[in-house]
Length: 102
Image (cartoon, rainbow, N blue to C red; front, side):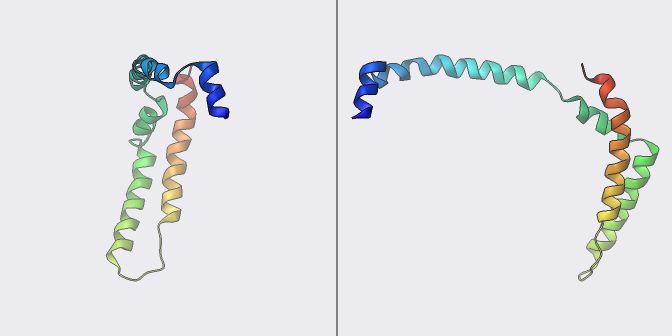
């Protein structure tokens, strides 16, 4: 019963299907515009990962990961090294990020 009122009030459902291609074209145009935008934090992170302190902490993380993966049974994980690396990278990013944001 509710569906019948909706059809009478808003027209046939077939009319809505005709408008769909125009809406899809608008959505595609919006997606193309969004693809052109680049998040500045990604580029800054890449640059910061190449600084001396970040390179050192990444090497410690990779050494730990190699050591842990070479053992079949171990309780050790590389959480501390991971947090050290992320802290170093984020510290670098924090100083540079807001100069690039408009």
